[in-house]
Length: 261
Length: 261
Image 1: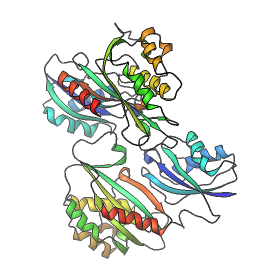
Image 2 (image 1 turned 120 degrees about the vertical axis):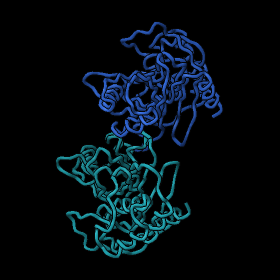
Image 3 (image 1 turned 180 degrees about the vertical axis):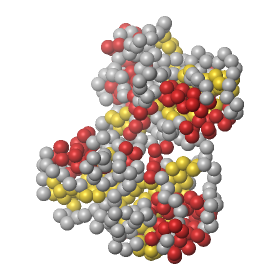
Image 4 (image 1 turned 30 degrees about the vertical axis):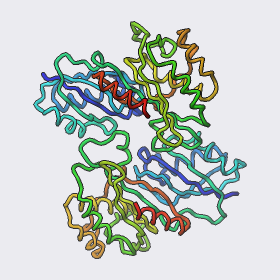
């Protein structure tokens, strides 16, 4: 058996999230179905991140074990023919037996995109969260600064079935940029994330931008560790898992790049 | 009653084309349904182009007559709240009583986009037609040149229920550009178009690019006026109606801009 690391991109709109569910279309479920057929063996896919329903990925990481004779570098090409167009295997490489995309990851980069203004672009509407009016971006940046570092992010996640052992996480970067007119991106790089954490961070910063809360209230919410002190959970459509890092050097490189932009 | 000109954008993926059908979701049908509800009167929408199932639009033109008290400039904002996110009213303006978007149009700009290479981008897959391998773009440009001007485009359309009075059309511009790595766009500006005409032109030029036909065969197909002498009908997903022109000056401006790029 070879173990293969897959880099995946998907448009999450049509899926009930990453994680397999017996009676719903999920990204993991669709990959397992198509690859099991293609490789003529029962394939089990492990993912680095259990993205929510409607959340997208440009760089999800996953792994599978297989005894297929298909060369690893050919696997994306043959699998993409069978996969639906909203799921693409972007790259595949051999990894050692013990590799696990979730436990071996040293960090992840998520990007949340708001689209501002009255009329949104129909061709990007699946990949953004729409906001009416303008935002106080300086106030949002001021509020975002306190999130970097190691903190108890209790206030900034929703409860889930899997209760985490600890709610302490380390964020390496939280930055706001405008990649084009009417667009505002929030890039978040961290070692790991709690359930809905990026969406709650984005929703809270949005409230700051809309002057519905003070920038200082974000630091206060970190301290009180009460969910009710943070803001709304921003919609799934605006969120994309950009990259999962397995090398500290690559993570440092991306953080340095984001800080420059 | 006021007559209002609408500029529309839509992602055609989920629709059985523009034209109303009693039992299928269409763009015209959805607009009539939502606007009739919103304006509390029976609204009939006229479109400039009956785009096919799966074809997109950045600049479809349409009109409606209404007695609503809602100011014209507010109509896009209130209507977009009710419309599904894959249909947007981009602009609205008052026009004179006799205005008809199809009969008053002096031309249209369509763009066909091919995506080349092994791995396509999941976030643009709805808006392109994917092609494996590389294309001989010079040969395609050579073939495209003969299409400009007034010709009988009999070979370059599929038969439809509405038989056109004439198959002569005038193309002002047919140009190929690469807006980014792995992308090839064919811009076509003409006075009017036959059924599937841009898709047959794109499919025929694709065959030239794949060296499956000689560049000279395109001019020959124009002369023979036999459908079998032209190429395949390229998939709907790659096609977008960019703009409908009502002023010759604006059409000339866009053609000049396209020629420069």
